[in-house]
Length: 278
Image (cartoon, rainbow, N blue to C red; front, top):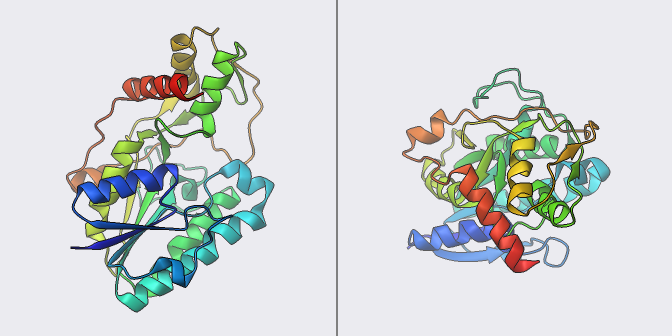
């Protein structure tokens, strides 16, 4: 039986990955549940055959506000994980981000597109990718786009639920920004499938639905389901946020994976979870 270590395994994505790995028959261990309270150390990593690295920075806005802090919780911990994996001849799955593409000139964006991150978050994710490429270790990189789902208590959908319930659905930006929304269950399934592709060549796989959906349409559904007025937008664009992120998911589909949760259904799940837990 494969021993699979999930770093950041108590987080939103990490916990879903841990469940998916267990369902696939792996013995699952978790390390680095919270970087602030439980930092990654060699002792915390133990022995493993596969590691899925879900720890590290997770917010563009937070990285802009504190670039050094984002670097410190993203790059050095991953170097530790990578060194440990190399010593044990273990496979590595690195969760990266579509943010590494920056202002992508090709949409949907393939894995071969130019790398030009415009936020510290994207820069630090790219640095972790480079560490994989330089490591001489069997790795695979999964560049996730906008992962969402019930249980995520931050970012746009959670924020929109709170504003809609308060009857004040006002948001930054224009509302015409497009994001590629991937349900957490689909993301976890892709990550588990991608683990089999880890190699010294360090393949890269985009994780999205391959469809761009406007922010106004997403938050508009939330407002309707919570009986709120239609959303309004200030027009103020946040630093580090390109107008469009859309993944080319050809490679992911070639692995036999495909997204299964329709966006409208996934948003309704989020709204129901919000009602039950807030």
